View (cartoon, helix red, strand yellow):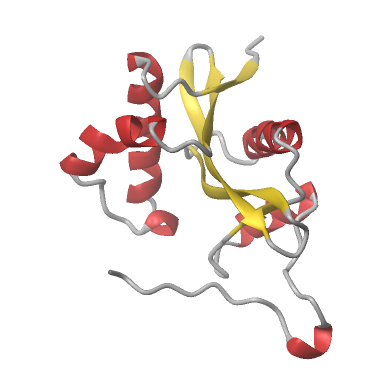
Length: 161
């Protein structure tokens, strides 16, 4: 019987770095990741760059020695709580392994890390058309962000620089 293992990424370990880039590229090529492969410049610098970011934490789900899932997180700060928070920036599970609890295991690893860092909450963003991911996040305990129902829910926005 196969056993799923979730392990923290050592960005400077060649095997971990190769697995992270493989999984992130698979996610980038998925329609929910934009549908385009990562640029070579990004794949060459990614792990070295992440190793220099103090609040970066990534975990890989391994099954029979093969990487099948990834979660990349970055520590931020909640000014309202005056405590750190952990933002899930990427979460990806290879097609063929979805719906088997891999995402939940990755979220559990992120939550355990957040708790060990004294974080007050986990945050993430998800495309509104990604119903399976939304269901998974809700099952884990995530909910839409709102302070007052009369003011509405928070909307994620971006501006490319």
